[in-house]
Length: 472
Image 1 (cartoon, rainbow, N blue to C red):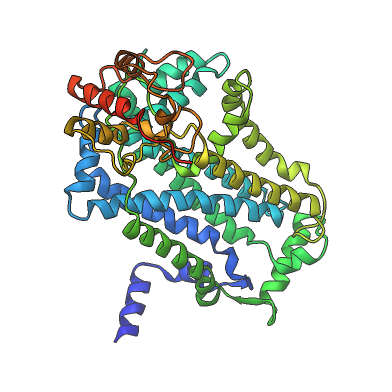
Image 2 (image 1 turned 180 degrees about the vertical axis):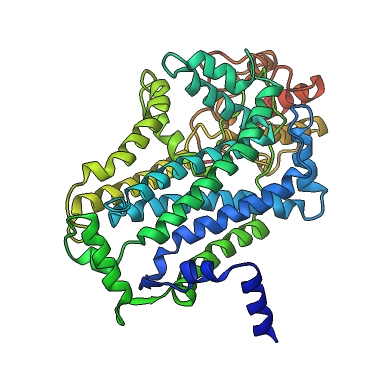
């Protein structure tokens, strides 16, 4: 019965040619670790499905975007799960993207006759990064505003067309409601449509040209025609070939299952990314990009101030040009890792640099990521009700991101430990510093962000913190 239904379905919908061409085909045997491409496709599918569900509730308007994200997270049925899965699958997609890129470079997946596959892959690489970047801007919180300002800064420095391009991106002469609408259109419509087309073409070329085989890695290959002969001989051999379905599909599916399970586990255990305070188009925003861009922020932070503003503009196109030129730079007949030690070293060192820069950003003094845990109160010290309120406000507004209190809290060296001031800061000086910090201090102004009662409570706590005993 089931076989008859399947036969009817395949026949009536004309699926037999699809089955014969894509599933019931001979391919060279593949190890499990080549499932990264399939994993990326699966994660993109999750992004599309969860994105559609989120779009049913999300409001791409400046006055309601932040509230709609809060509604999805806190009140909509399973909204927290959908948003969390969207968030974690996006981050893991970026991780798998770098893994896929590095594996292709290690095994020279850009060499003839796969140059077209490589060019499409490089384009998709930057599309995924742009997709991951624009996604968290739609929360319209302080993190988003900071990222938008960084983006506009980059765009404004593009030679000749920077000013016009900035106006187009932000939807006018100033950043405002139209900026969010443009970003939403880019993230939810333009990029997904472009990527679906590129992914379809990319997969077609993967089927047509095949993936890197064991035979290619063990001998020099001087031309695309020679690669085709090696590939055809290997896929039809009894020892080196196999049927794509179910054998290769099962092996690549192992990585898909592991990564998707990890995304679900992170969603259930950690949940979606917390939303910061609603976007403030006037005040100073907190630099708190997503973890998959930590390495870039760390790299920029290490550059001299005179270079950094131009580096953020020049670096992405230089990377793009380098990647698309790889088939013309690397003219060696060797593929794989054994005969290409310089490329192996380059990939390993790049991976180490990305991890080191990400860790530097994670531990950096310029994180400005508010912690929900208020500073500890030393034993034996009692705080008044208003001072206790100020202690919690100290955490709510991110003061403990830069200022340790009696040795606890922030490990950064941006702000002084309040317990080390020796009570030298009077009430008015603290109040003035909170409202109008000096220009050379890495601290945003809290004017228009604090109510008068909140300001008084925060000042009271800062005064009390100066009396705390310093922890050794």
